[in-house]
Length: 257
Ligand code: CO8
Image (cartoon, rainbow, N blue to C red; front, side, top):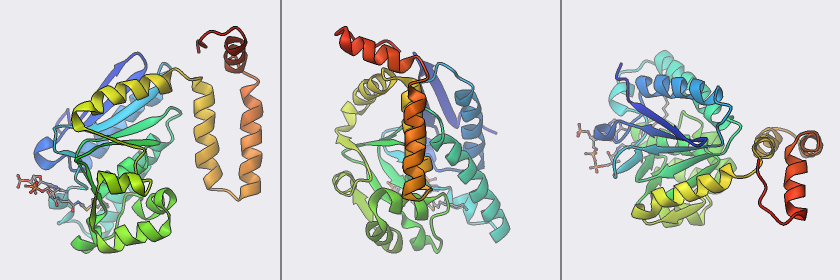
C-alpha cells in the first residue's frame, strides 16, 4: 500500500487532510479509504483538534470520484463491501466534533462530491466542477450522495443532478447551496486559513454541540430534535466555555477558549 495517498498535517489544532493521487485526479480506491480511516484514528484521538480542512493534491481536482478502473472489475458483493466501508469512514469524518471544511480545488465528481457533502463546509475555487455522473457509468451514487445531496440542496435539484449526471460549475454550486463560498483558486488557501482560524477560535464544546444538534436533529422528528437542542443548550451552561464567553463579552475582550 502506498503510504501517502492521504497526507495529514496539523498545526495549532488545525488539521489538513490531502488526498494525494493527483495522477488519477485523486480518485478514491481501497487504499485511500484505508488511509483516511487511519488519519481519522489520529484526528479522533487528538484533544487539541479544532478544525479540519480536506482537499485534493494538485491544481486540477479535489476528487474525481471513486476509482473507475477498480470498480470496473467489482462483483455486486465487492461493490457492496467497498461502499459500506467507505460509508462508515465518511460518517466518521462527518461525526468529528470539530468543523470539517472541504476545500474544493477542481473536479469534485461522484464519490468526491459525496465526500464533500459529508463535510460541514465547502469552499470552492472558481474553476471547480461538481457532479454526480454515476448514471452515465451505469451505477448510482454509493457513498451517500442519494441521501446527503437532497438534504443539502433539496430533492428536486438532487434528482436533477443525479438522474442527468450533468456537471455544474462553482457559480451554480453556490447558487443551489452545494457550497458555502467560491473564490479564485489562488486565494483558496489563504481563505481556508482565515476560516479555520475563525472556526478554531470559537468554543470547541459549543461548536461540537452545534454539530450534534444539527446532524442528530435531522434524523429525528421536529419535537424530538427541538428537545435535543434544549438539552445540548443546557449542557453548554455546565462547562467552562459559557462562563468565559459571557465574561469576555461583559469585560469587552476577546474570549479565550
Ligand atoms: N477513476 C479512475 N481514474 C480516473 C478517474 C476516476 N474516477 N478520474 C480521472 N481518472 C484518471 C484518468 O483515467 C486519467 O488517467 P490516465 O492519465 O492514466 O489516462 C487521469 O485521471 C486524468 O484524467 P483525464 O485524462 O480524463 O483528465 P481530463 O481533464 O480529460 O478529464 C474528468 C477530467 C472530466 C474529471 C475525467 O477524468 C472524468 O470524467 N473522470 C471520471 C469522473 C467520474 O465519472 N466520476 C464518478 C466515478 S463513479 C463514483 O464516484 C461512484 C461513487 C460510489 C462508489 C460506490 C462503491 C462501489
